[in-house]
Length: 438
Image 1 (cartoon, rainbow, N blue to C red):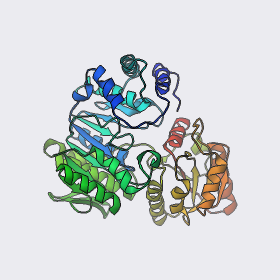
Image 2: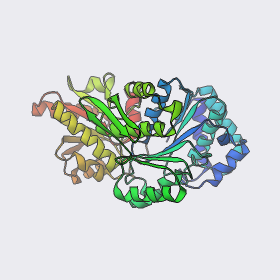
Image 3: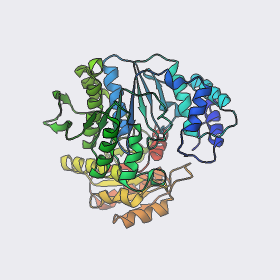
């Protein structure tokens, strides 16, 4: 991880050196720092806390848009960022300024002294400090990793907790089974606080339900207490309080129907002013969340693409996310057939074979690259081996432009017409694409 050499970037580089590990899941260090800062986590607006393996960022984006559509000021904390660190901290609708980010990070650095603390812990403390100084009606708080020992899990009881679909990811830190990972995610569930569960495998769902029952947390389960489906070009949402006929989400993919439903269910459970139907409708139409099946229309990468090609960008990076994106590509193929080509880069810590398996029989070819500037990236050759193991034709490339030129050559040779190209496999790669293609 590296940062641009702005004042905040220089500070962020220093903060990376405060702990020998990038991830070390305990709460005592962040609690110590927050105490030294005067407990800003106790001075926050009403919170919705969101965990999960896939879809939590999209769910947060929907809630933010729905609340802003009702006229409310909303703080948002999310991670990782795509291009600039400032994306992680949104203050009442606007990204934190460079001046305030630098000052807040320096304040946290001074308060911490030379004591060990991870990068995510100290930057989360900085976010809480910034949030505490700006009035807002709500804070949408996304978990960084897991839940139980995540640095965000030091807040007072929120208005609601949401747990989006759980899959296998970060097994080195969270456990090697769905049940173990679900137990970590369940750590954000609080006594007496509404808990909204997105679609879950039975193994994960059983763990979450058991934890909610232990804490007396009112539970709202997708497919049992609420549901959303696409019908005749509309989103039909139904829960125990009734039915809503809504526009389809701006974000593409059938998995986004479920993500939107989690956001709607949370707002309706909280109730009152939070659940205005006009705000929900506005949010579905206007939600923004880059690199989640985002269609690219201009820039150097588009200039290098075959004429009339579709170019899509997605940051999903685990088997569950791969399955969701592959399903979306299959849906597109059914509506408007085009040969599908993938350009992909992934981190060494991810299950590359598991990610690509859902694309077998769907993708014509995968061109692999290393993610520029990322020490943890798989090399193009190693990723090529994983794609071939998944049973898909592949070739390595030097960089994004070389990969796009290869796709152009394959497409011309096969005389198939304009292709559909998906750049995928990592949020880090997605960030490089957005920075390069701006």
